[in-house]
Length: 273
Image (cartoon, rainbow, N blue to C red; front, side, top):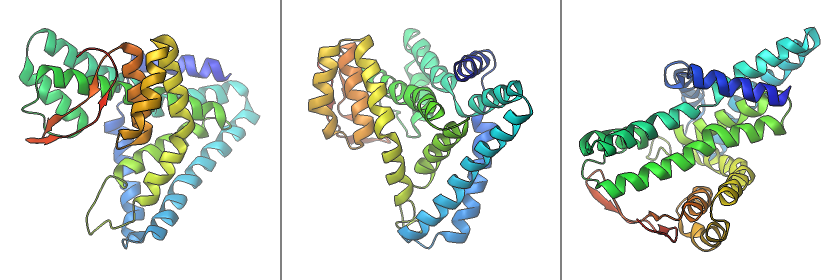
């Protein structure tokens, strides 16, 4: 049932991509705002309480619903699996940007490529060169493939029913929504969301990086993973990008122009531009 659920969800997502930005993320945003309004006083411990009250009950609820449906009929449970996976996996979200940017660069439409990579990353890249856009697109592709597909599959396989997929997607969303927001209004409230997501990512990231290594240049991927990943600001992302760059034989990282300012980043990979 597990394998069939995954295959059906992937096929369905290819045929008709789920619009998470239209249907799922507004619901999560409202949910996050509800708990933030009631718990956010800038303290880390209240961030822990809010995260636990928000993520864990929904995860358990999905597991309970799955088992109740399974007692009625296994086929209904299969359909429930497919529905949840369809809503929590988003391979086409990553491939959509990747394909459009590739088409723009092939047509030498640098301005549109800059706009698309800026929309994808959430930053302005109006002065980025072609090589820089290619690097950023590959980096986003590696991280997106992991977080939209491989990590969801890992947690789906690990936890009963489809609750693992829900658990990962909620954790990912609120790590970005709360953890990356800085300022006096947030204080340390989002720290736990970032820390727990880093823990949740620890094993799936390494499995994905190993998969990158196996299908590419294993020796270079292992070398970059071992010697370069620790210098990336986010260690989990550093492992993905270093292994991916080594596997493909390309150079990623390096300095970029973001919102008009140069951002120094370590070099990843051992290949060519």
